[in-house]
Image (cartoon, rainbow, N blue to C red; front, top):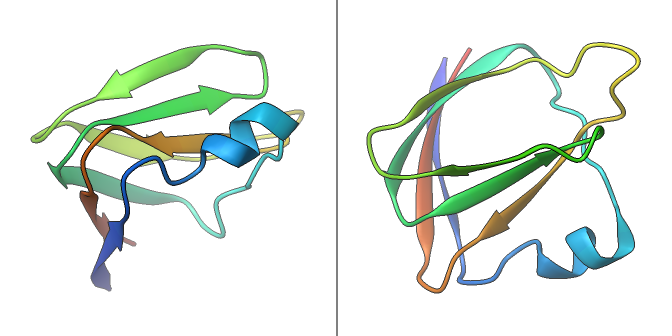
Length: 81
């Protein structure tokens, strides 16, 4: 199963400020199609992702999830389970 999701510029900024983590609903892969995404894990590590980057999402305990923030332009991700 796969799907494409679009996000407006600066999506997730408020969640980062309030530390509102989101756990992934399932182990899945995503590919950045457009835009720049910053993913912050529960331990505070942040990675910046660009078009072509592929990531496996797997929020494993004791992780409480992650916060995703979109850069200055809209972004698109391709998710696959």
